[in-house]
Length: 295
Image (cartoon, rainbow, N blue to C red; front, side):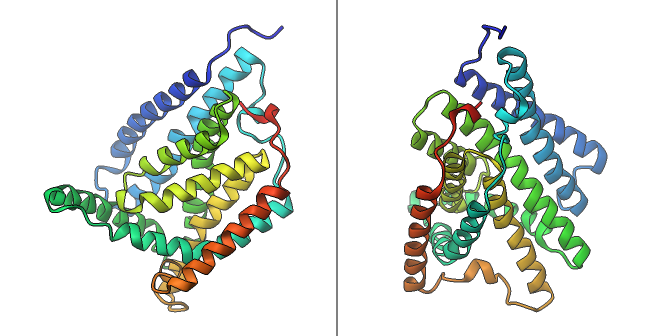
């Protein structure tokens, strides 16, 4: 007989955030004890990235899955939205959307980066830009691969592992919990996308990351599984690692993926139109979400 002790969706959300905060503290202490407090050390940055995805993002969802199994007799696969795999059609559409959206997204990125605050808030803007510069310097350490072997390793860390960690927490965990609680799917997708973008603490990259979060959220809603968002996230991150490596080897120009479309309004507009058309196709061709998959 199933237990009558069921957790409400706000309690599950609270559990995930509390688990994340505790895990952040544990990871921070452990990394400092092992590697020291030198945040410029590339080993420190890599170890922090791996621990962040495994301990801070994946572990709380695993613990929630264990609670679900004990209290509601729901298997792990339901919590993780893993009862089915991605379809070939979904993967192909993800790749097409990723290609189509690059100029439009770069245009949005450049616009967001060039936002200027009123003169009365100049100190706030300077502080936010300093935070942005520190975050960019950390990211550069992960992306700056000089050898093929290191590039492949960083594709795993920055692309695959980050895709797994963040999609388990934000999409399978937070979004899945809200959908199971019968919160409106659009409100759920955008609310989680806001949290996803805000938690990165980069104001001058907030809007493009918000749009990325919404895209990943709708992928979960449209496909009914977490693998497609993971693939999309890994493709987005991994491609930047590969492009940086190719630029270091002088095969392409620096920041090739990040600058395409930034100075061409018509290219960015065409990119946005094609992307919207592909999203419409994706939405219509995707099967209806099976609510039994939701945690």
